[in-house]
Image (cartoon, rainbow over all chains, first blue to last red; front, side, top):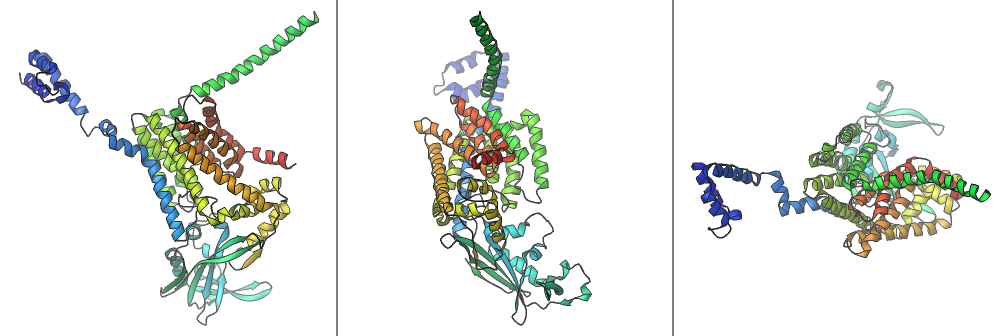
Length: 246
Length: 315
């Protein structure tokens, strides 16, 4: 009897069956139906109600707003990221080739045209250029171009270059005797990278480390490549930084 | 008598030829009879298997995870039909490739991530095919639109410097240079020695050039931006318009003549798969071309076909 009443009540409440008029055909049928049928009807209605519950995934996917989000999510992300990349590239030194802006071939390739120069400055103001492979040697990953070097060239920012310069400035350096161009010279090398006996070499006095990023541009009429400075950051071992650039 | 023999010989020859022709026809019909959604899913999985990472030196874990997941989905159809599988792949690629290895990730690596997300979203919707078609269309259009926009807004692209530099320096363009301009291996090697001097210490570096290079660079510059803009506009046009049909032709032409020639087969494969997803069933030949494009791009780019063709052209 209880189920019969529930069936009648749910039929009465449900606008989909009842319609606007309480005296609809479904309502009349529910009133007149025998008890067993009413129980079955109640169970069916419960099943339908559960299926239509908002927690059900299918119902959620059927909602118009969610449909729109799912339909346009990927293209919208593509467009937003590309616009942000274009803005950041115009405001800083980010290359067009990376950062999902689809700017391949729009500018000169960064890893061939951008070069990093590392300069050690001694307390007496003397500047010594360090070959890039020595700087790259700090990255234990190997490969054809270590991650940090690649990131610096693709997006030379003051913070990224400053972190590398600080690490180099805080390292201990030694003066290693080597023959360069037939002349005996003392070449600075990081103590941790030096494979010989560290007691046999003198420490290299260091005031600061300066890292410069240069970009070569094609001067087509002049048939030459011309160097332009993108950014320069200097760090002392005490961590006082000063940089120039965009 | 002789005439009868000739007729008999012709008949037997045509009988021999007929099975071959009908075999091709059957293969063509079989290809077109495939479910587009299923082909798109399989092509994407295959691309992820042959091109799982951005090439970062520490990408072994990306390769391992991506290849094993994709192989599993390739042999187990319910998995590749599951939106959560594609969502997992998309999130994994967003974190590992697009974000963490951004300096290694090329544009097609990022686009492949978006495509995985598009597959996840489309498969979650009731009408997956229509949703995927819309996503494919929009992703192709926006990719070409942003690419053309970047190029047009870059002064060094507009004055032809970028392509001129690539012709001098990029070994992928040497073959093209040899065909159209007087570029021998000596000149290429000499310029490579010059480029080795680009260490930040030299203020200027003299370059050996050819008078045809600026002309070739200008042609490449404007041809590229013109076809990219055309594809973007045609793909953004309403599907029912006459213009829309030409979008597929322009995209196929671009994909067949650009990326495989410079060794970027993955971009061609991916854009071809997107093109297939949005291609209507009635465009049978174009659908067939889209289906065969990945194979062409891979063989052309990775095989010796390119070197063979350039050898023929330069001789």
